Image (cartoon, rainbow, N blue to C red):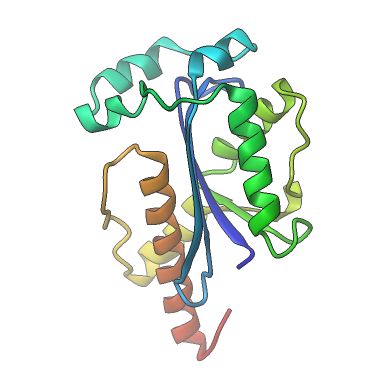
Length: 187
């Protein structure tokens, strides 16, 4: 599998927003198969000490979310930002067929990938994927909507990075399957 879905939970929407958790899952969009998963709770305070800046609107938004979602923000097993980014980079390196061709999906890359890249830069860690291989769930979701795919189905706890990543991978796979059916084969 050389497609990975990434989702972040953050305390801001700006490129240098503090990261609260990183969720990711390898998947095969042609078969819908899910592979290795990564989930890390980040000590967003360590990220803020390292230059990340929260915003009040996002903090207010978090206060309106479910107790389960809010509980994921403060846990005993949180990693400092540098450890979280290092673990994530190692996980990608160990599980990708090839980092050069790794397809990195996010909802959307202009949010998740930009914030994650900023964290990589703040921690002086190399970004392990090629920017040319970033893919956008929102774009394919619009295609799915036009094809009549149920783009609203969801399982798990909303605003939990690993559940969001899995749900987004399942959605992309369902839409690729529908497109392949319309074409008579794999994409």
